[in-house]
Length: 222
Length: 203
Image (cartoon, rainbow over all chains, first blue to last red):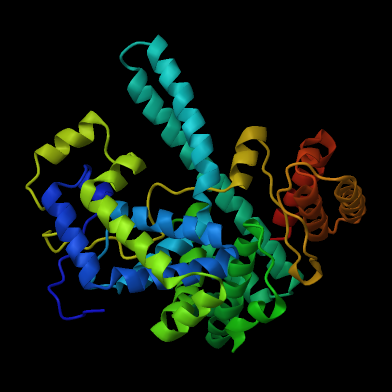
C-alpha cells in the first residue's frame, strides 16, 4: 500500500448527506486503487471467512463492508485501507445487518402506507416513529448482550470483569479509579481486558450461530 | 457526577475493544499468508480480483449508491446540490469516522427483532464452558431436534427452580437454537424473564 500519497480523507455519503458527483467517484476510485484496494479486500475477505465460516457469507460480508466504506468514508491518515475494510466487516458481522434490514424495510413499508392515508405531517411522524423504534431496538439488543456477558462472567467466576462491567455501566471508565474504588490492584483490571475481549468475541460468534473451537477461544492467550 | 452510559454505548465499547484485536490478528499477516489462507478456503485469486474490479466499476458508475439507496431523498439531494463539487474527497481536515463502530445507524440482530416482536426482554446466558454445538436457525426442526429442545427446556425449568439463572437462560437458548418456534410459548417467555431478572439481581 502506498503510504506516500496525499492523504485527503474521503468523507462518505452519510456525512455528505448526498450522492457523490462523478468527479468524486473517480477521485475515490483512484484513491482506493492507489491504496491497493484489491489487496485490502483480500485481507477483509480472510477476516470475513474467519468470522462467518462460509464462502458465501464471507463474500456477502465483504460486499456490505465495501458499501459501508462508500457511506461512512475513510481517512487514510488514520488507518490503512485493509484495516478499515476489516473493521467494517467486523461491524457488519457483529450487528447482523441483514436480519434487521428486513424488519426496517417492513416498518418503512407500513409507514409509507400510513403516509399515503394521512396528512402532510405523516412524513415527520414516520421519521420520528422509525427513529424511536430503531433506538429502542438497539438499546434492548445491547442490554440483552450485556446480560449474556454478565452471565458468562459469573459462570467464569471472573470477579474483576464483573466489577469492570458494573463500574463501566455507572460511567466510570478509568481502570485506576476502578481499582481504587474496589480495593483491587490496577494490574488486575488491565489483565482482565484480554479475558473480556475473548468473552465478547465468543458472545458475538454464538449470536451469529458460530461455535468457536477451543483453540480459537484460546488464541488470544498466545 | 458521572453520567451512566446507555447499554448501547457500553456494548459498542466492548465490541470496539474486541474488534481491534481481531482485526489486528489478520492485518498483521503478510500478503503471501493471506493468499495461502484464502486459497485453503477455496477462494480463487482471479475471481476475487474480478469482484474487486466490478466493485470499482460500479462505484464509478454510481451503481453502488443506487443499489444501496444512498441519499435518494429530496432533502439529501438538495443539500448535495448546494455543496461544492469534489467535497467528498478534497475535504476540510475534519476527521472521518475513526472506527467502524460508533455510527448512529446501528444495525441489530435477529434477537433484537424477536424482542421487539414479542415485547419481551429476550436473551439468555451463555454458559460457554458447558456449551455444546447446536443446530442454529433450522427452519423446520426435525423430531430429533424437537426432542432435544424439549430436553433443554426441561433442564431450563429445573435450573430456574433452583434459581441457577445463568444455566436456565443458557438452556433456554440451546432449546431456542434447536426449535425457534417453540420459544414463543408463554411459559418459556415467563421463565426467560424470571431468569433475566434473576441475573440482574446478582449485581
